[in-house]
Amino acid sequence: MEHFFRARRRAKWPLVLVSQRIMQTNTAAATLVQSADHTLLWQWGSGVAATRDSTESALQLTSGLPVAVRAWPVEVSGLLAGVLVRLEPMKPDSATGPRSGEGGKRRTAYGWPSLTSTECSVAAIIAEGATNREAAARLLLSRHTIDFHLRQIFRKLEIRSRVELTRLVIQHSSTGHSAPNR
Image 1: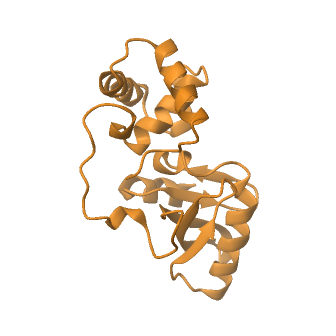
Image 2: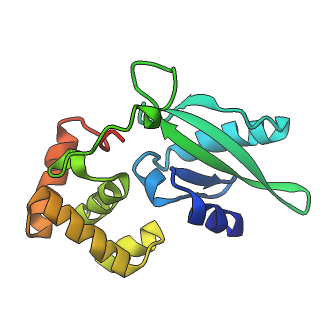
Image 3: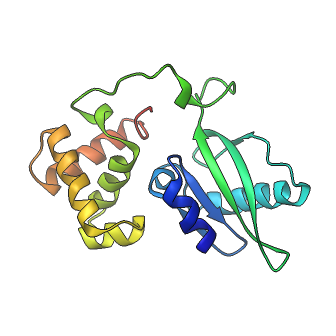
């Protein structure tokens, strides 16, 4: 976990620590991976760690989302304890590469597309009925950071309550959309 916390502090991308028993994500990865992805990521990551090949590969998560992945082994006393995995969503219709390099598109100021991946994660967790403190614990953030993100979400979506947020999250997820494009 120490390796994950150090890497998470400097990571600006979705990051997952996976081992045979656990899977830990940073905020950006929380919207991409599901608990069902644990086995998939561990099998892929441990295979990459065994070959010492950290080149980028393409993988399809259990949700069907294609991602570019790169892994770094985490060894303790010479044994593989886990794998740090960097994820980058790819266009579903192509396996040519990650979306993040798409010419610096500007995010709109209001509405669902204006939310960052972190704000989407916070919105989804709050819509499940979690308190700010519970959301903070799940995302490994402070309660004050969750408060800040919620204020931004409410401003961008032009809403005033958690009930409205929940309604919008349910409505958005029922239309088949995932996190907004970055």
